Length: 365
Image (cartoon, rainbow, N blue to C red; front, top):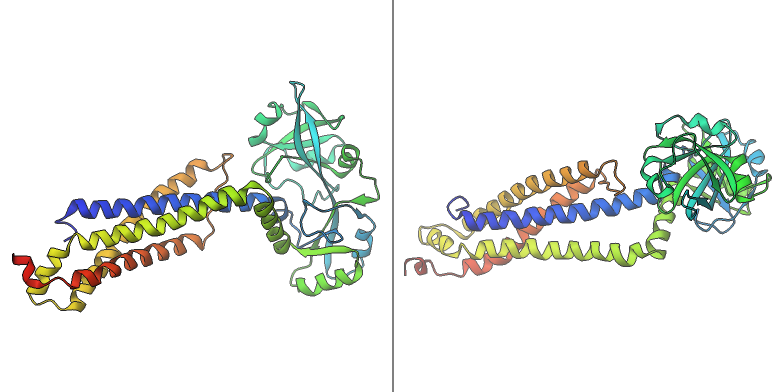
């Protein structure tokens, strides 16, 4: 049947291909944005983050006493603890206008929480007093500064000493500097910081240590990396235009995909009602017809998934290294495939009852 009525089969396959690709592309961009939102936290190398009291994400955090680091040093389960400076600033462009940037100041010499991938130079440039790095994807926004070029941030001089690759975050361009220069730029005093990063020793129970730190520092918020990353994503999703625009459009796209695939398979079965009537007249049982319809649904779904995932892989490869974030978690393709098969089956089953109501003799009229 599939090979004989090729136009109907091709239409059903194309419908599945279009939805598999479009829904997959929309989800890839959405998860790419989620990854970008918490990139600084996920790639910090820390297990626990300490923020100001009653803060649950880096966007709303205040400052902390830097002496908390000395208190943490007394805990046997902690491998290291480092203060980090996070703050917004204004970078002066060659054109004279200003560009908003996010300053990330890491503590020398370990530079924990600093850039995690370099395109030109190394993170050691942050050991220099005025050394700074920016991501190569953000160079156009900053007036395309060259390595070694001196620029002003909040009226303070920094030197672009290297380019990062993929060490970006959601929002303004990230400028990595050392904590000394960061305090000079932001005005944060030497005895304060905005975050403290904590790395635990291997095999340590993170929940137990988190509870110990909360008792030690009752006036601070203590969160694991996963908790903080989740809070950041929820905050950005609900307090920016992403939730109301992109999130809504993603949900609508998924719902439209569900309807189209279901209707496509429904129509595919109805267009072959005469064929099923012939089978019934030749002695086919209801379960035989059901098995044929199920096989057709799985075949069309498999072909559509194969082509759709191939196009989706091409999309992901094409945007790799670009400013468009795209990321597919490992669990998403299998879930996407399973849902597609279920929808193909559902659309076919909905039409099955109508197909079986046809009198076998109608095939010969």
